[in-house]
Amino acid sequence: MTQSPTKPETVGPVSLLECLKAINAGILTPQESIAGCLSRIEAYDAEIMAFSSLSETALHDATQASGPLSGIGMAVKDIFDTYDLPTECNSPIYHGHMSGRDAAIVAQARKAGSTLLGKSATTEFAFLQPGTTRNPHNLEYTPGGSSSGSAAAVAAGMAHLALGTQTGGSIIRPAAFCGVTGFKPSAGLLPKVGIKEFSWSLDTVGLFTATVADVAFAASVLTGRTLKIAPEAQFELPRLGIVRSHSWSEADPGYRQQFEDLIKSLKRFGVDLIDIEPSDTHIAAFHAHQIIQDYEARQALAWEYSTHPDQLSPLLKQTLDFAQTIKPSDYDEARMCAENASKEMDEHFEDVDALISLSAPGPAPKGLASTGSPIFNRIWTLFGLPAINIAGLTTQDGLPLGVQIIGPYMADQATLHIAHWLEGAIKRHQER
Image (cartoon, rainbow, N blue to C red):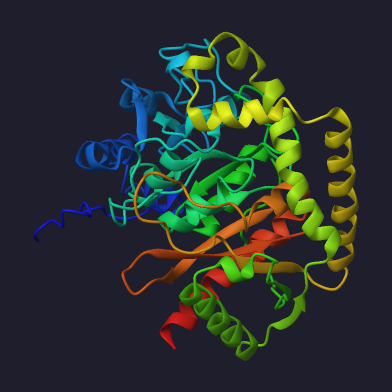
C-alpha cells in the first residue's frame, strides 16, 4: 500500500482490554504487548511526534510488572513527574528537569502493572502554545491540546493508556480530534499530586484509551472504585438532556447536522430526550472560568513569570501580564458565580441522567498554530462534572468528530455506562 504524505500507516487505537484478554489467554505475553507499542512508536512517532521523551527500560520494566494492568503501555503527559524521565512542561525553563519522583497517579499506574513508555508532548505548561505533535488521521491537522501527545499516542496505537489533564478542554477536545475515548472524571477522583499546576480549582487528571470500556476498566483499577463496565448488568435507556450552548452557532454546520441526525436516531432507539437551554447564570459562569483560571495561573507560575519572563511564549506572557490586573474581589466573585451556576445545573440532573453535547466546535483545525477552542468543554470543567468523549462520527474527509456525555458530580460509574451504551448506539446510527 502506498503511504499518504499526510497520513502514516497507523494501526489505529489498540484496546487495552483486548490486550489483557490475549495476555490472560496465553496468546500474548506482557513483554510482547509492550514490544508492540515500541514497534509502533518506532514506525510512526517520527511523523506524529506524540512523545517528548521515551523510556529506555520499558521492555525490562514489563518483565518485572505484575498487576491488573501488566502488559499495558502508558504514555504520561509531560507535566506529570516521573522519577526516571524529565518533566519539561514543553518549556525551556524546565529543559532536562528531573523531579526524582513519580506523581501520585503515575505511581498508582506502575503499581498496577502498567509500563511507562514515555512522556507525551504537551502545550507549554498545558496552556495554549502548541507543541509539535500532529494528528494521526492527517498530519496537517492539530491533535488538539493541551494533552496533545496523550491523545495522539493512543490514536496511533503507540500506547494503550495515556494520562492527561483538563483545565478547559484539554482531554475531551484532543480525544475528539484524534478519535479516541477521553475521560475527564469528577474533580478529585484522580490525584493531582505531582503535576505542574496551572489552575488548582480547574486542573483535572483524566485518561485516554481506545474505547469506553477500556477507560472504565483503567479508572476502576486506578481509583479502587467500581467503575468498569459490566456487560451482564441490566441497563435502562437513559434520559438525556440536549445542551445546545450559547456558543452553538460557532460550531461547524456539518458537525451540528451530524449531531442532530444522531439525536433523531437516539429518539428512534427509545431514548427520552429533553432540551436544556443555557441560562444567564450558566453563561455568566462560562465567562467566570477565564477569570478563575488566569488568576490562579498567575500564582501557580509566579516564579517562572518573575525569574524567566523571557523564556515564556508571548501568548503565555501576555496572559500572565493580564492576570496581574485581576483583583482578588474579581476572583471571589467569579467563584461565587460558578458555585451558583453549579447548583442550578444540579437541578437539571433531577430530570435527566446525563447531558449530551458536542465535544468541540468542529473537527480538528488544519495547521499546528492552534489546538482549537475549549468553548464546549470549559463549563463542565468549572463544575467538576464527569465528561466523556465518544468517538465514532467522522467528516467526509475522515476526520473524527466527538460526542460528549456529561454526568452529575461523582456519578462517574453511571456516566461511563451511558457513554458505553452511546458508543454502541453511534455504531448502530452509522450502520443505518
